[in-house]
Image (cartoon, rainbow, N blue to C red; front, side, top):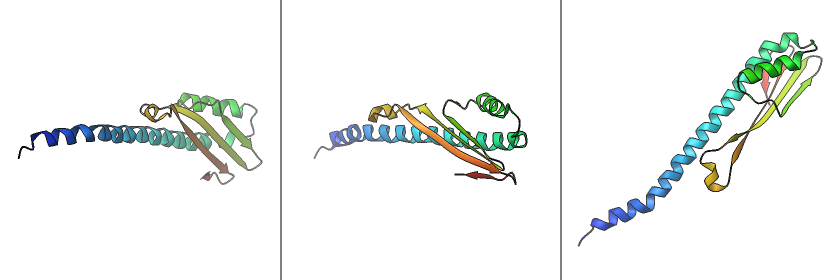
Length: 123
């Protein structure tokens, strides 16, 4: 019995599945990298700027620090209370392989708050 063509057919059938799996892993890694970058930047910026929370230009300073770290501030929600600051940022990141299944962008969102003890809470 001649089995030479069976391996080729199996390879041709499994190759697209392997490529899709690889594309999914790459996109997931990009999303996780971007989410981690956003979380760590928010944490650092909140700790850095908390002591100046009563100043008038607080929001401008916060926005400037975020933009220096390449975090878009178009959908930023800043809530200042007497002893707490809550910051939420939402933005979209273009996908590479998600376009195959109809996802052109991924939504990245993070919400953190810092209280009077300078303890950061991720919400």
